[in-house]
Image (cartoon, rainbow, N blue to C red):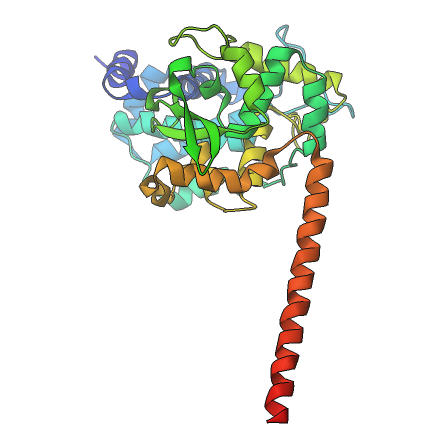
Length: 362
């Protein structure tokens, strides 16, 4: 007898035990949404029967799976966002809001496809899958500025100030930040400069790949305040992920920085903005180094060959771009650097003219 629940449970025990908590939650949401679609009434676009009873029917005629996925996508696109009482939520213009975006739907499909594959149902016709989903809109993301982060820090309590400063100077995910322990920290020196190095264990990362990152000199006092009189096995930030996210948004509202994208209900400034800020600022020195420090592993294995000291050297080059406070001095330094560059160009031009004159005299 077919037992989809048992099969999924066995599969998770064998293969998914190493996945991050967030990935497991996303997988569960995807399968829950598929079950909800199957159980929905036919008048609502569903099949009015359980997923377990539908799977054997699809196996008899594999091509039916494309119609099944097409119906699922149409069902999800029609769903509108409601509150816990089932009342429709509308935007400021009175328009209803989709329950999930097309990008979220595509992400859920990855897990659904994996589930179907485990059941022996293949989705090999890529053109049909693309036709079902169509092209999704790609909107430009708004980057957070140094000034906005400064306002956010000033509007937050001391623990959240530390969280923001550390995240924006290390590029860590919130899930990683809350699990880092005192024993994961050590000091590293390069040419007289000492910085805290964070050894991020593979088991707490999204990709299950360990890496290192560094804490800026500006963020160092915040870190040292957190770890003072603590034990090696203690986490540096004694807050759950939910508390961090809620505390962050509280600071955003207090700093009057709350603003939503026109195309979605997401805020333009979230905790993920601190991570994006780190990658962007480090990209001013090296386009790939910031991604590697933040844990984006694609095509970046070249950096794994570097020693920790070489990584710190690269970090120090970009650290000035991460500085949040006292940026007036940085602007003055940039003006001086620009003046020196212009003077150097003038000197080179004069040298060329002198050489030409000497050749002409000869």
